[in-house]
Amino acid sequence: MFEPTPDEILRLFTQWEAAAAQSPNPKVAILAPLEPPTTEEATALLPRLRAIQEELDQNDVDEHGRPIAHRDQAAMGQLWEEWRDEKLDVWNGYREIWRPNPFLEVNP
Image (cartoon, rainbow, N blue to C red; front, side, top):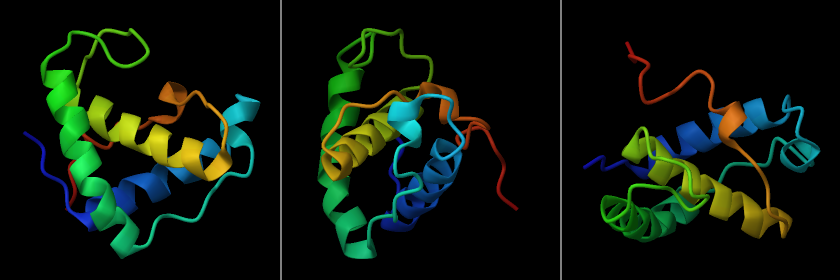
């Protein structure tokens, strides 16, 4: 199971927020990019990420009913969606901004 650190949450959320600003979906682009969570906030998100990972381990589809292609990405993406929804107090769409896929990139 993927066990990210608060720094990994910050890295991914920052990357996805930068991409969100370019999204053709106005619900995603609105107010993007948001400031990433603080290290303390990212640490506080880790238990929710673990809960999402456990939920996805029991399911073949994500919270939107889509087949899960990559469980770690789906869990982190759902965490980001929840975090962003809470910040904006709106429901958003996200999948198209996960390019490139940070779970498949090799970091030097």
